[in-house]
Length: 618
Image (cartoon, helix red, strand yellow):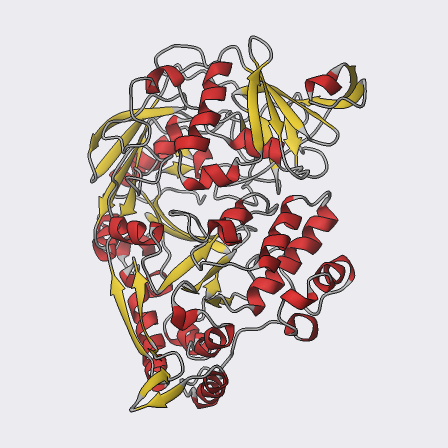
């Protein structure tokens, strides 16, 4: 879930202390604004008309077809059952605020006309826009907002129950005003978290079972609604002409396509061939080999099918081979560290990735939040307070994953791995890595959802086998994969944790002990570590940007030195392929692709239909 924020106009209001639950002061400094920022002030002032990275006069119309791997099981994206949900279904539902794509963490009013909060951010109040409507014409009300919070916290996906745990209540305090009160330690991110909450129609869901998958599209309030669908195979959305939000500044110049269709494929290669045949209009390539060698075709050479790298400043997070530490064979950190020496990134990058990737060395890669060097200042003070709970190397060594010379000769690394394994109590017996004291054999399965990972994982398994490890891999469909993730039914997976530039409540679901056994949580590794728990709470309650950076770096360092994962790689650009029928703004957002601001260029589309190349480049 993407996160952002903003804060603006400041005024003094009397009587708000009781309103916010404080009995000690008769006056509280209250901010009232069109936007709220996590730290600092919003980029765009109260009278802004549109974001810089959109064309407010973009043409409206045309259609675009996109591809999706796998299938979908439901139109309800807010529950654990029936995952994955239909692609694009989020376009039906609006939230109180919406993020900008060119700021680290700022939210602007969408359903909300104004936002109010005290200096200590102990509560937040939103005033709804009077024009906001559901697709059936009924107004969006405070009652909808209150019902949504209660429903997501009691019946929604476990993520919501964790994410919204500190929101104590939502109360109607005016015809269009809703007040959220918070509980627990101070958390300056909570007003922003509230703003991101999708608002659902209470009147539609009355008489329906919210906790069951939906086989028909729900009522929404967004710029699109479902036009048609072949359940599990495709879904098409049509632009809502009378959408209430077309003149809201944060929406101007976006959502310009008349129709957006998502078509599902069970094989990656079939999906790519459909793109080359012109049946798919826009495609994000995530396989480096295909990007390097798979598009040597006339349409690309002639410029009709555009192949383009679009750089970005997005946080890259952590993609990795993730251990399930609930399995006894992976319970020991030294064992996990040893097995990392069997992954030869340098050889993989050179021979399978065409040198495209950078090795990931942080859970917050490509941001200032990533730890580096040795800890100093506030970060060191935090870690010193946890010294007896964290690995000593946190203080003496800079974390780095094992490296090789890229030749494929891994002997030195495997010797190091065997030494570490022996120290952890493992030995090779009849060719099999065995732990005699515990009666264990090192045998596990690597669960995959994409065939593109098979060639990479095969090389990893070959190296593991040299250590006496009985490793195998299995590729399953998206539904089975999601179900097994939800139930933690795996030994090792390719785990991916995306991050924002302002980490907060979501860290709880990723790493906190309380989430280790919650089905569907993002604590894939099964971490139960008191030090990590303390660091997560510190990140969530950081009072300013400087402390947030120090606390996040400390968390990053402790996660890395516990060897919960084997870091893989990242890439700081979008690999985009699209048929030359689109127009797009000259300015692009730093932290997003910005496809929502593209449009169909009639002249280009006509040239494309006639088999010609458009005269100018985008």
